[in-house]
Image (cartoon, rainbow, N blue to C red; front, side, top):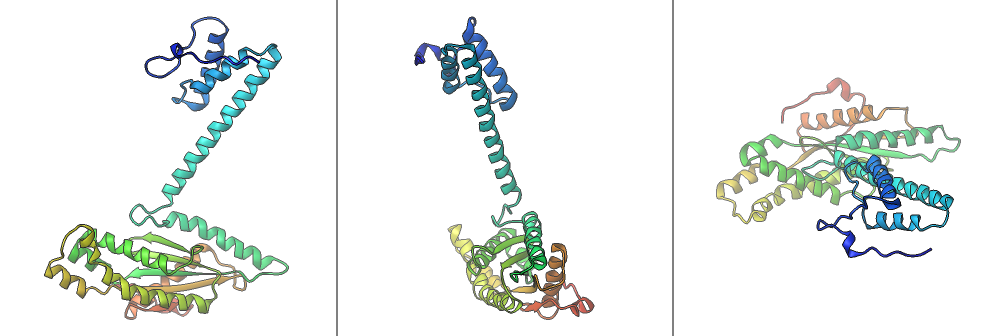
Length: 297
């Protein structure tokens, strides 16, 4: 099959190809453009590959060969478009499941992800030889977070949340998940942990936040190339910089529960921590349902 080169004269000044007004090339270009418009919408300009393809198809010796080649070209073009759409959907889904402030996964992500993990545990429970899959949830609430916004401004509050996420990520594994649930509430998903390990991890996280969160807040001014005033330093010093944590675990040895129920139980345990002094860890127990209290701040 002869190879026909594209001559420079075939380009318009804008860089797009001229389409011949008559002859077989015109018909081929028209068909290609119509097809491309149908699946690419506005992105329907014929590029150099399209022009070269149409020329090569037209140079084929028989009509059957030309039709087969044209069918293959349209199939490849449709596949290319499918991949493009799939990528756009993936990026859109990723953006929809990410908190814009902290770049952590958001509530929507956890709702979907946790349902999948709970289903995996439930399937293991019904297996002939269960593997004993387990998981843990930590419901974390920043103590007196409102005082950060009220005394130092919402920009400092945003910075505190970003620092908290950074600390939590440094304390967890790559297959755990640190999720911004909403406001100053964070949920940490711990994969494959027993109740004892989940509580131990929660205590270590609480201690790390107490040590580092308030200490890191002056960096807010350093990153802005500003020096905090004495009043701002005093306000930071008076902040708690601590978290209250609720723990709930689930495994194939447990009675079947929904993902929503697990989050609710972790939340109840977290509120218990806040209600009994803050800066502490509480593991869910059914008895907490009778003592539940929701403190302010």
